[in-house]
Length: 192
Ligand SMILES: Cc1cc2nc3c(=O)[nH]c(=O)nc-3n(C[C@H](O)[C@H](O)[C@H](O)COP(=O)(O)O)c2cc1C
Image 1: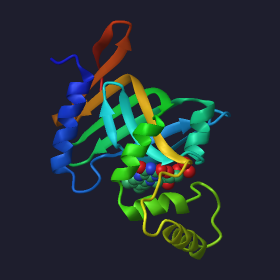
Image 2: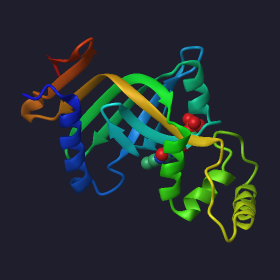
Image 3: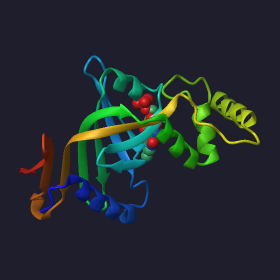
């Protein structure tokens, strides 16, 4: 059995890319506020390697406010047609400006303009206000590249624990858990 959780992640993720009809890179991200209240929302995985799992968002959003105070998060992938889930827990850091710039440059122009228009997690009086902000961004950057807004960037979750759950017949599901130790990863199995 592989004791490299990243290799196992890669294998499951590659399979999900071919089997899931939509957003196989969608994952739930749970954060916690200063009162200990958890909150969770979906984001898209935009990069991963042995350093961690990266998503991009508005740096003035609720989730990032919570991450600033408590830089820990839990991620969850659920691939329904494969009947698998992966749970990841770890510490969070901001992705560098250079890495965020490079990813932002690959986004569609619409998404780039949307990043300028969105005041994520803040109250919005009407859809028309959002559309007006989008139009304003479109006019502002007409004829040139859209730069990354300063309030938009990536976060990397460096895992300390990764658990792979696989549906098996007769509810004898399989749970393989990997915990980071001083010299690598230790694998165990849990009752389902
Ligand atoms: C499938 C899916 C993918 C999403 N991907 C992202 C994403 O990559 N980044 C992001 O900021 N929000 C994404 N969202 C929106 C978030 O779920 C959420 O509404 C937003 O980030 C605000 O969350 P917050 O107020 O807790 O910070 C996605 C939503 C769905 C349903």
